[in-house]
Image (cartoon, rainbow over all chains, first blue to last red; front, side, top):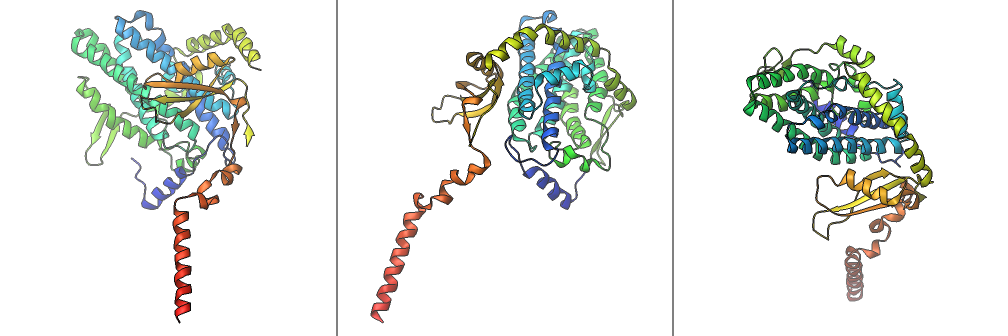
Length: 305
Length: 108
C-alpha cells in the first residue's frame, strides 16, 4: 500500500481543500473532468442494474422480489442524480446514453456480465456493493460539491443493497443445499478477480500527476482503495462461510497489506474494449428504450419550453 | 445575481424528520417537463430512505441566484458591524475610555 510521506500528506490535503460549486471559477479542464466522472457513474448505474432486473420475475420469494425492485429503482435514481450533475456541467443525459449505445464510451469490466444462477446474485452483489461503498466513501472527500452531495444520498441506499446482498448470501450458506452453497462459493471465486480489476491498474509512479487526481476528483489511488476494500470485505465472506483460498487473497502480517491473485489485465482490457459476454445485450436494451421513449421525451421537453 | 436557466430543471428542497425547526435543505435537482411531475420525480429519487416530511421543487428558470460577486453584499457581520451584539459593547467601552481620559486630563 502507498504510504504518504509527511510532506506528501500536506500536498494531498491541499489538493482536496479547495472545493467547487457549479458556479465557481474552475481551473482549465476541471469542468470537463467533473462532467466525465459524473457521466461515467450515471452510465454505470443505469447499465449496472440490468443484470438484476432480469431476476425480478425469477426471485424465489415475495420479500426478495420487493427488495430487488427497490434496489433497481434506487440504482436508476442514482443514474438520474449523477446525470443531473453531468448535465449542469454541459453534458446532456441523452449524449451520455447515445455515446454508450453508439460505442463511444466503454463500460467498466464488471458491467459486461450477467448472473447465471440465483445463488450467484448474493456474493456478486456483495462484492460490487462493498467496492462501490469504499469508492464512494473516498469520493465523498472530492472537490466537486454537487457530486459529493449526490454521493451522500447514494451512500445511504448502497448500504441497504450491501445488507440485502449479505442476507441473500447468508440464506444460501445457511439454508441452502450443498449444491447451492457450491454455487455461492464459485460466484465468490469468479467475481473476486473481476472486482479486483474494477479498481483499475496498479498505481504507476506518476499517478499523482494524473489530472483527475490533481483536481481532487479522484481522491485515493487504485491500490489504496483496493487494499481498503479487501480489509473490509474478506472477513465478511469468511464469516458467511465462504472459503477464501489464500492464493486468491491473503493478509501479509509482516508487510501489513493484502496479497492477492493479480487479475488478468490483458483479458480485462480486451473485455472493456471489445465487450464481455453480455455487453451487446445491455447495449441493445438501452438502445431500444431510448428509441421507444423518444416521442415521450420530445413531447415533455417541448412542453417545458 | 443571475437568473437560473434551463426551463426543464427543478431544484429540490426537503426536510427530514419531525422537527419543524429543522431548516429545509437543498438536495439537488431533477429534470421534468411539468412541475407536478417534477415533484413526483423528486419524491421517487430523493426521499427513498430518510423520513421525509416536506418536499418542495422550484423551477430553476424562475429562481434568482446569488453569484460569487454578491458575496460582499451578503456578508452582514463584516459589512454592517453596527448590527452585531459586540458592536454596542465596543461602543460603550470606547465611550467610557474617552470619559476616563477626559476626567484624568481635567484633574491634572
